[in-house]
Amino acid sequence: MINNKKISKFAISIIEKLKRNKYQGYLVGGCVRDLLCGIEPKDFDIATNATPEQVRKVFKASRIIGKRFKLVHIFNRSELIEVATFRAGEEKNNQGELIKDQSGKIIRDNIWGNLDQDTYRRDFTVNALYYCPISKKIIGHKDGIKDINQKKIVSIGDPQHRFSEDPVRSLRAIRFSNKLNFKIDKKIKEAIYEKGHLLSNISNARIFDEFCKIFLNGMAEKNFNKLNSFGLNKFLITTEPKVNKFSHNVIFEALRNTDRRLKNNQSVTPGFLIAALLWPNLINRSLTKGEINLRKFFRSMDPVLRNQQKITAIPRKFHSYIKDIWILQLKLHSRIGKQPYKTLKHPRFRAAYDLMLIREKCSCETKNLGKWWTDFQKNDDKLKKLLISSLKEKDMQESFKTFGFSKELI
Ligand code: ATP
Ligand code: MG
Picture 1 (spheres, rainbow, N blue to C red):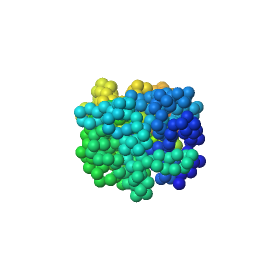
Picture 2 (cartoon, protein in one colour; picture 1 turned 45 degrees about the vertical axis):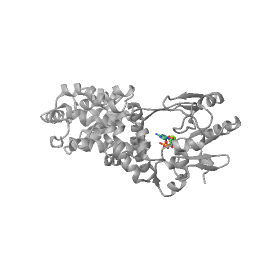
Picture 3 (cartoon, rainbow, N blue to C red; picture 1 turned 30 degrees about the vertical axis):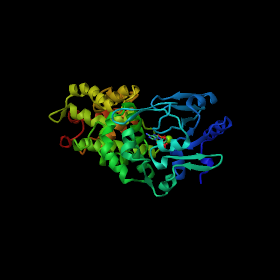
Picture 4 (spheres, rainbow, N blue to C red; picture 1 turned 60 degrees about the vertical axis):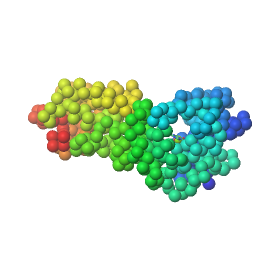
């Protein structure tokens, strides 16, 4: 049923080597699921009965990572494969540790087990299939293949319990249902409503990882809508689309823009998306009587970032990147003398220009700033000068004061 040609040769070589060393090794989870659904897997995960330390000994180019959930990364020049040791359930076992907090959330999950036990530690039946590329057999959860055929996301065990153990499973259920076009089982829906609030207990680093998987996978808008229907977006983004029309428009435009870029094989970064998604927050905080107050604008940048960081970590390297993009929005409006040349040379110009285009799409009162900058970038020096001189003082002042968006949106 699975064509080995679609599988990473490196992953297969790892399984072969595990076997030569008398360990078990299987492809597992998302890659098996995706191959059965006719989707190209984005990565290949391996499960084994060897402990992380044993795996580490067999593979020189490897490293043990994680504390809550220990794994081994095995790498070659171009690929990185994650190898997980089979986990056991909650039965007593003194080989490792499974620790929960008061809400039932697992804070450490390192009890080793066998393949059968491992199957029941996975989240959904469709994610609990194991494939051996040598025997070409698929084993694992008895309902896995059936649920793939019936296009259903079904929890392994009671989802109320499983989502308390790990609230991120709520987000995963939604993401997989959109990615695969599968229905979410009714019991899972109920558990999302009941246990979704536990997402506020998850570390901001883990939520940031999930944020990237949800919004940088080509289905940002669809995922946002489904998350909204379960009231879960507030655990990922601090901007509320309901605050005003402007917030709503910017959020959706930013998500659509990300989806479009991925479709066209253009690069995307979480930094840009966060800059765009938080823009309405920054504006709403900077307004005085419908006009931008520059002092408030500059003072609000850090608090707006900090609020978002409480829920999703934002890697350090993106902080100045995001602020640069925001500050450049102001610079894009001032088109006097040498300023446009300086703005154009800024290393973040391209990203700032992209955000400006998003803003312009969201405002009914277009000042043609986007077109002006598109022309300015394209043209030679003579025409550049002409573009600058063609601007009327009055237009400039007006555009700067209202910042190019209409007051009635706010
Ligand atoms: P994708 O890579 O497309 O996001 P995936 O299913 O491979 O999907 P991963 O996060 O790579 O997702 O995880 C690999 C496998 O590990 C999953 O298929 C699942 O079996 C298991 N898994 C991952 N996260 C969890 C979790 N939070 N709870 C239980 N099992 C999990
Ligand atoms: Mg995966």
